[in-house]
Image 1 (tube, protein in one colour):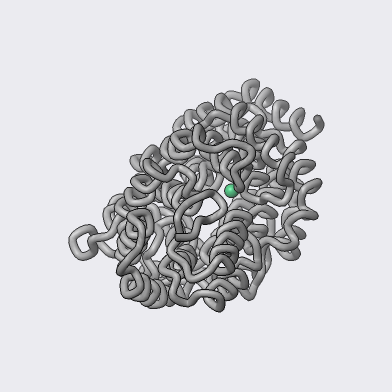
Image 2 (cartoon, rainbow, N blue to C red):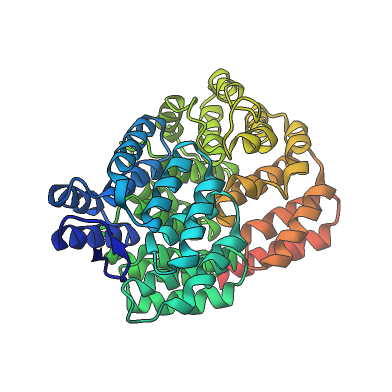
Length: 459
Ligand SMILES: [Fe+2]
């Protein structure tokens, strides 16, 4: 029996195969472009390794795209066929892939967490649970999942700083910004090419409105992302978010065109980044010219995907922004319901996906009261679609903007008070507060809010 570099038993044909397995996992942890190359080398060394087939299946599932579902199922079948004499841990991985192929994210996550009780150094299980907790909107679990295994890791364990980075992101999403920043910065200091942890710290700056520090953080580290996969686009998107908040719209559009919108890509995250930025720009009165068109074209090819509500909501936004309302409605109409589909996402499509997507369409139709009617009751539930707090802020802005446009200034002001209390460093929040106070006839208060925004821009 061979062992991987963290000492876990691995069913393999040779030491060389184990070396390629370790390299594949390390490349995945670093979100590196050469992950697939390492996987190919692994298959060349040992095409019968059950975990190679499981990992390949996992990688197909990570794309969240229906055309790869059959390939993931194929890998699952191979893993089962090869898995006559495998370890309990490997058998649990096969079960996790099986659950994921059924799009039962809760069951898949349960298998990985079960593995981690006995094998807390199974970094693959840890990383995948981190991913699914994220898309289940379970910030506390993202944090705790890592905390549970940390006593079994130390600096000498390969991958230790990546794990610290997962912890930093879990802490950040759970709202512990100070701990997230301390741990994240230390981890990036030790491993500057770790884009995931760099991104975790970027979230801290975003949530605390420390936009200029964020610009410096990401700009200084960006030279390390040349070998990273498309997650680099998302990280560039965060840089653009800071510039957006600083009302540096030319910089945002430049980053859009040169750094984070690859018009060749139909990846769900790449599209979501672009959609979320164009919508924010448009809401702030910036002319985005014809950029919606290619996003709507890509989204139109994905209207029957229904893998993540998070992605569907962004596709609908592109379609509605490009006036393809009938296509957007078709996407909503074809969402699975909880009775017809036994997947984790089915009740989320029904409870949140439909009203959320209808609210996006209503906004583009100018029916702002309808947006409020649909979205206001969902405010504290939207986290169930997954994604980060910074990403889901799009829908909070949608609601505030709708309340303003509907003339519902009391409600807008209340939402904005929540916002400026949590993060007094947001220019957008203070400007919208001023407008809502103008609407209520409270001129002096409005002037004070406007001054707060001006001060933040001048600092
Ligand atoms: Fe992010």
